[in-house]
Length: 122
Image (cartoon, rainbow, N blue to C red; front, side, top):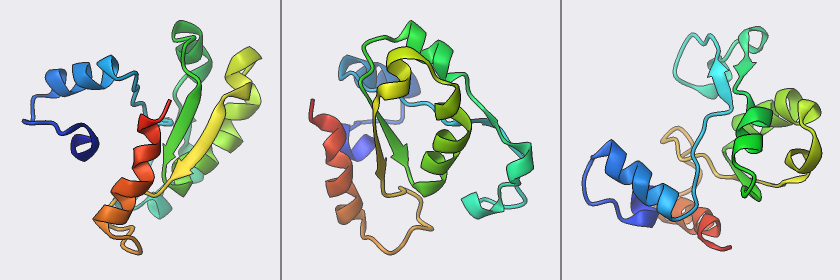
């Protein structure tokens, strides 16, 4: 996000405000989980608790697209969130983007930035 929106400093609130001004919401699919390490593959699937997306989408009805930061976020959403969604929330456009994690090294930073530019297109 900092690269796409050219954040000039590490001021969290200013950066969050800039994302909001550009119609971008950032929210993790997982509310809680247990994992033994820092990789997504370390997540114990039996401990997954997702955020309340139905309530989030109800309070933010102008959301039209959901982008995922990698395959794990997308798979958890499809399995644990999407089946419980109702109304327009269940029909939002979904798209997986390459993980921004340094562990996802099959793509260069420039390739990742290029793929992520899709969030700027309305």
